[in-house]
Length: 629
Image 1 (cartoon, rainbow, N blue to C red):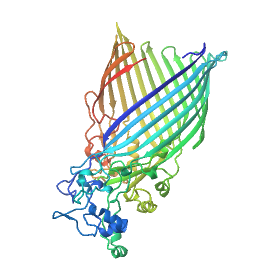
Image 2 (image 1 turned 120 degrees about the horizontal axis):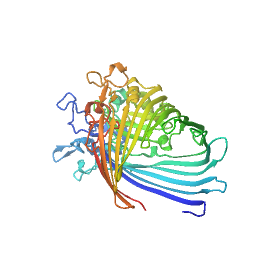
Image 3 (image 1 turned 90 degrees about the horizontal axis):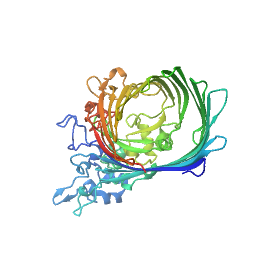
Image 4 (image 1 turned 90 degrees about the vertical axis):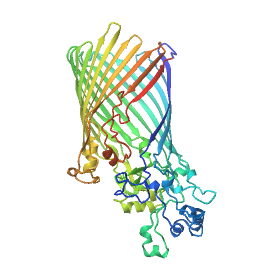
């Protein structure tokens, strides 16, 4: 809205809501005593959430006390005095997670995302030609997480009226907590074009910004994270000692705590973090001659948690042949501070080993108890150095071709550490358990965000566009292709993990898009290509999983063959205000190669396809209405 001859105010905002529901890995409903060599061989064992509790009376009293045993004896198939629980002449068995879902189950993870943002500004121009823009923004994002078709096995089940275990009333859905991110920012920008005889054109931009970030989580309902009456470790080793025998321990084992698949946010994972940063910048761009342009920019930024940084960029373009051929190049540095969310992310997730046994792996911060035990250093920013060069070829008014080569060297790159497994680090996990850390008894692995080393990314990009004017419409062709190569220069990865880190993206990809406009109609057709990708699934030449720490020569390398996917969209402009679109991505419902064994070793049990950027879920179809006011 104009408020004067040379000034105006403006504002805009967004609101979005998104609901996602997706299945986790399948938990098999296999008979008790299952063996991989038996009739169900190859399916993997029951998950830890399906086990039978094997504590006896003395085990339970040792861990929880006499009163707790009297209250929960029915879950062990016992009376409060320790005698077998018999109902209608039938001896009752202890609680078994499998009987909650006798046919197995897929936990369903649900995410409800709510986002809104507002932006307001005041801009104009002074009499001397200096343009200004004073603006401010605020944005908030909240994700509510829940999980269903699962259970917290450590809770057992309520007691039925006849004294038996009431499996029909086991809680199977949980609110597991929320994450909230809040961002505020204000800025002031100036732009001025300066008349000078030294160059054909000189443009100067400068300004400053101030930003605050706040990130916190909301704990889930108690039953999603609590250690219920059946939680506890295996007592087999202790029962065999002199002290254990003196206590008369039976040497049983308890059950996993927390909602299976995704444990709720527990009070000990509650966090609220914030930071602020301010920055100033200067950008100068000049047409030195009619054919030669050069730009130089610098930005100084100071963070409350990462200190200060100065980044710069220089870019240039030179027209070699008028209206036909130009060259360009750029060099710059980059600085990326981890987000407050990245720094404070904490969660526990359920997975599976290659033999089918269940794992509980937690992601924790460096200053958490697990982080302190493993000596994890505080996370720092990523630093980048970038180079690029290219040509622009314009053989006609309707055709444009660009080719660019680039290199990005990233130092202190952010990544998750490999999982620290309890079998490899028993002493550290014992320290975590002895600290009283919530859920430590069930943890089988931990990982952390860290600065893992440096990597170099090199690539080439090609883009060609061509327009055709029709009698009453236009036809536009766009061909884009790229080749990218990733090399880790500094790292502490095993041979297997290094191979996958350098090959986890298809090296070649491309798109060919055609847009046809005719009156009120627009038709878009597109072909997308991703090349063959190699992966190391941890298998030897015989297809046997051999772990992650063998030399590369011990593994077979599997290939995920390239695919072409086709998209189509039809848009009709009803009038100047409304347009309607119907379309399909991957309209032919193309899938990647089915590789169940390779996928299973990655931990994604129950899936058939690698999720490496291809449309592994087949086609998607949509309708959209757009209104302009």
